[in-house]
Length: 217
Image (cartoon, rainbow, N blue to C red; front, top):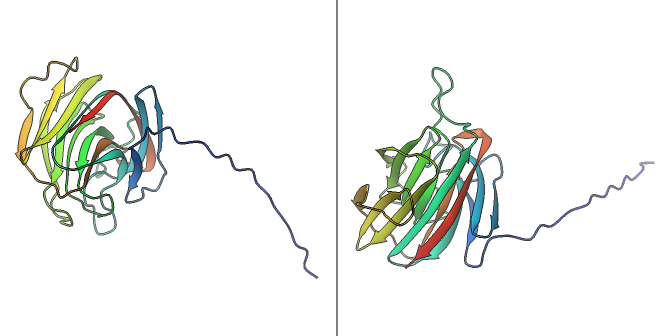
């Protein structure tokens, strides 16, 4: 005779703190789940994953992305106040992991493993970097341009208008100056625009804090 064992567990359901129109995605399912907490327009975003690149045949764009759907021209701005801990980057010779990063992204598809996107990001090392892919599905198109240094807190802005993407930075959120980079790009409708974080390490997570988040058509 076999004794039956019954077990029970308690499950706590926590209501979402994401405002209406926002959605939460973990691109290509990083090994460690991420999280989002929003309070008074402060977005605390935790994410894991390799990076916004194709890596071998097994790993595609990874990271945590909170976004809104958009059609046509759009602008997003936010202040990145914190990015820690730095769990990515090269800690020893032969270590090819990218650094922990956070920033603003426009992405064409949330289901395509290698989607078209433009991303302005701050690396944990303080480097300001623009990453992009011009065609969804092209795993070999992983473009990157270094734009100098950035010191937290920093205001970031990403504008898509007239078939061009422009990236800006500011120390106060009002004086943006000339774009740090302008590049031709088009996105199929609908696309998504929002906040992004990635640890650069598939075995650890990092957390970014954004405030002053604004999206306008």
